[in-house]
Amino acid sequence: MKFLFTDLDGTFLGGTRQDQLRLLEALNTHKIGLVYVSGRSHQRIFPAIDSGELPRPKAVIGDVGTSLWAGDGQVLSPGYETLMQSLWGDGQLRLRTELNDFSSRGLREQPLFGPYRYSLYFDDPETARQASKRIQALGFDSLLSDNQYLDALPPGVHKGFAVNWLLNYWGLDPNNVLVAGDTLNDLAMLQLPMPAVVVANAEPLLKKALSGAHNNPQLLFASQAGAAGIHEALQQMGWTET
Ligand SMILES: [Mg+2]
Image (tube, rainbow, N blue to C red):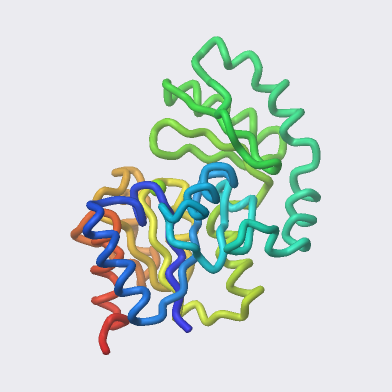
């Protein structure tokens, strides 16, 4: 079975409603399984699935790779939870304290995020870079994305880590999985050695980071935005041929 592992905002949800419906139809017709790989937390994904606004996927990687749920919203693997717990420890508590003095420089906590990350908004990139350094000095990873999000994550964990983990868990052949994204928090999964598409409306810094000669040879730069860009990739790969 083939799978699409896709970011939500700007990617699967990018483009027009018509583009989204056309992509969904192609996924259904060609029996391509769907997995969301999002920065959103549980409360910002599952209500949309339960209401029918988003199609129900086989699984959801949420919280920038630090959460993993089945399509019904339950924890997919207790083993993944245990792994996140061991890598993260009391990270939220420590980071909230250690980054407190950045609040006067415009760093603000995001309203909702899962238990194995600490997530902020920033206005000033230089402030975000300084906060990133402090996060890394404490032994966590930091990730700037979409020129507004600053995430502290367990060391080595990002969307790419989680995608790779799920591929192994399910025993999928990476050549049968297309990953899709549009901002810097998608970089790690778009660099995995497997088919990938960066949609046309992607953040310029992501396109730049992906344009090096050493990069993923199976990566496609779509000429269309959002869902249309994903559809374009499926067509180019021959996944939508009958
Ligand atoms: Mg996105």
